[in-house]
Length: 239
Ligand code: SAM
Image (cartoon, rainbow, N blue to C red; front, top):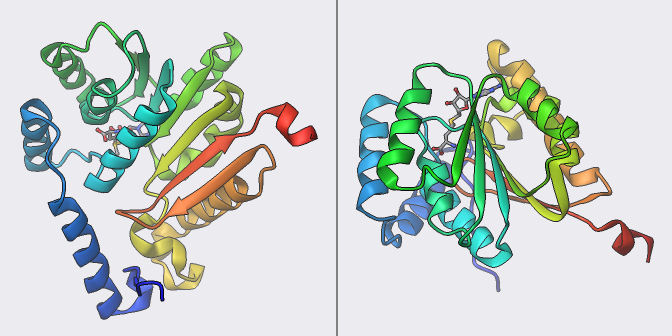
């Protein structure tokens, strides 16, 4: 009999919330950390209120990158560089990371962290609005084996067309925070009025990810929800 796993969401009641916390706490407790530099960066980020990827998504990215060995990685949403440095630590030698950030205050901190981590030679930070930069990269014919989407959640859908152009066949798109702290599961009317636009945009994004024939997608209810999509090869679709 499969184990009963209840997913904690605001909508599903206190027991489910407690179970979900316990699952994530337990899974987090199994982590052996990510090295002293990243562990210290995490402590600083928490103190300063900078959002960074949560523990299970860190492990997921490491597994995906170690297995798929992308040559070029694109990240949308650098913050202070935690996830870019984490990915750099497990990508194959000679691979690159291009990461996009628009928040002026975080850009110098990220650059400093890249330098201190020793990965500044393989990480390029592009400063500015992701919607513009993605379009520019797509126009230049750039291609990536892995795209990590971790910026403003309401904009994922706007980025989607360019992201599909940028993703290589066989490439993997990982989108973080797709559960919106459980709001995505709730009816539009149960969500605070100010959150309704983002709620419907995230639902639409998840619908697109799961119904676009070019993609094969799984949505995992770990941490704040993460989706993993693989872009199919054209030839595989035809056969
Ligand atoms: N990936 C980072 C990590 O785990 O270390 C965390 C990224 S944080 C959740 C999201 C970042 O995306 C913020 O620093 C925010 O300023 C940036 N961001 C949000 N919307 C953006 C946009 N449209 N263009 C560029 N950056 C954006």
